Length: 382
Length: 218
Image 1 (cartoon, rainbow over the protein chains, first blue to last red):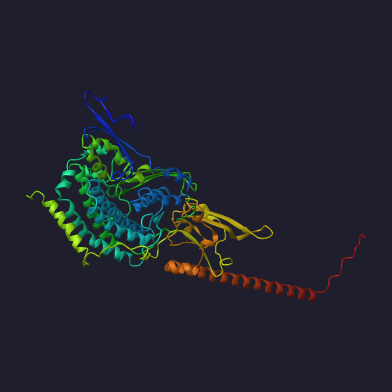
Image 2 (tube, chains in turn orange, brown):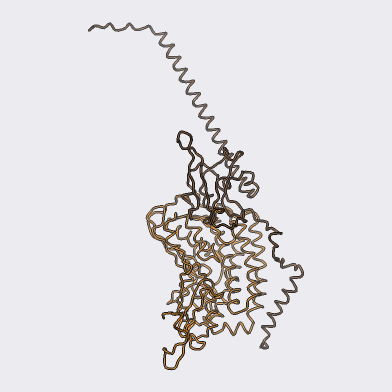
């Protein structure tokens, strides 16, 4: 579909007597989660065609990484999915560790799981607020969600020195050990979290308007989700049991006891509820990790961070980020810089089936469907 | 079977409770209130970081720790550091920067310069009021603006600064011990050499002087 803003308003060209309207949603629209545009062709209010347009936030991430040292790319990964920077750090560290065959001390693995699951909680909490905003409920839900998210960001600031641009992981561990008293505060915070979640559920899940807006909207079957290469909560909401924490068993996840929630219908409501259930599982993981975390070093002393040179080779490292499978494909020539650095961002690939989910729905549902995928444009455009 | 609309009423009850509760300090939920900046200033956590600065001991000119090795300039991911090494009157390079600029409009505060610095000379500041009406000149910090005392560093990051000071002190003691050992070794070697020379001289004195070979084929 070619989009010509000055010539196509109402055209009778498509089908006998049918009048369609082309509308450009975005790029500066409060519900598009960033500078994302959708060219939509509507018949009345029903979507007949949808074309996503992205690239407004392109920052040359992959080429920059090929110009930088291996360590120098670590702070740039913070800026991929800026809602959850720690998991981006983690995925890159996992890829480099796989490439160079680096061992990670046990305490560092536990710290990674703790900060990673806190990131998952804060991402999903923000999601609960955002999707209500997409439905028009600006205010309470978003404010409650951001109040809770802020407390987790405070923990991150105490640990790493920055709320969001953390630059925390290193090859073979983490940059610094937990400060004195951090673990106690994090534990106390996680204890209070279920009460907030109950309150949030009471506020939202029984609400008839919310049910009417979410149930049966944007249904995606499991087969289609697999064909589209989707991952993360969107895939699991369609009933597919696939979580890289279980499949790969990276880090210390095999030692922790948790379940993978799944949806049955694959509509927006399943995706919404799945996030709430995932938060509850993350709390379980955190409680076990707090109990099990051992003393010891947090960084492998054999790894030289400055002037790091992995052996020549190729590796693909991935983790289960809050939004899905986040992977880094690295090719090394044995030098100080990567020869090729490729990111597999979950947000971009989860967007591939956006049109399929939106066809036949009303224009107001497009925003909800887009919100239920949970994209971040920093990661889509890179 | 729920009455229609009961979900909405439940949600409303939650909002009402939160609103009423916001007027009281509830035991289980500490109230979060807006900070009245700039009258009220946030207390920054110790690890908080914004932009780098250069540490000096004692005098800002003589006590500068930076030796212009340019490792940070090379490692900086967005390349916001610019260094020129100083030269003495004869044009010989001195281990000291003449120019040290950081463009904080480019700096992303990633702390990699701090990690790679082998001389403990660049550290993270926690300033946050650096906005200006001009986009260029005020945002390039020169050496004079970047130089801050070790006492200031101890004030903003006490734990980290104490660790750094301990490390420097340990290195100094080690260096002093090594220097002392070297001096002792040199002295011992000298003494041994002197002794050997003395012995040789004594031996030479004791031995009868060899008659010089007569030059036969003169």
